[in-house]
Length: 118
Image 1 (tube, rainbow, N blue to C red):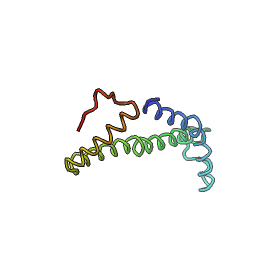
Image 2: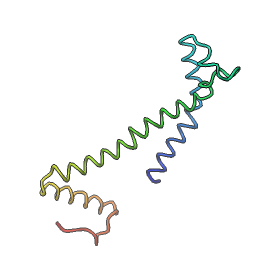
Image 3: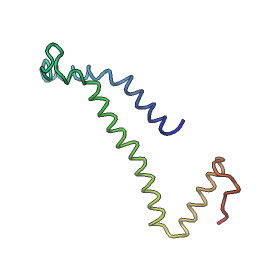
Image 4: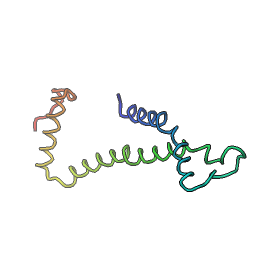
C-alpha cells in the first residue's frame, strides 16, 4: 500500500467508526452544562449545530491528523536532510551515504549496478 492509501484508510476508518459518536459526545456535553439545544435555528431539530456534530468531530480529527502526522513527518524528513547537508562535514556525509546505500542494497531497493564505490 502506498502512503496515501494508508492515510486514506485511517481517515475513512475514523469517519465510519468514530464520527457517528459525535452526536453522543455533544449530547453528553449538553447534559453536563444543562442545555437542551445548542441553538434553535431549525425548529424541532435541536439547532443547526446538532445537525453537524459528526462533522465537527471529523473536521477536528482531520485537522490534527494532517498537521501532526502528515506534515510532521514531511518536516522531520526535511529537517534530517537539511542537517546532513548543512551541519555534517564531508566525512560524516560520506558515512551516512555508505550506510544508506548498504541498507538499500540489502533490502533490494537499489540495483547493485547503481551502487557507488566511495
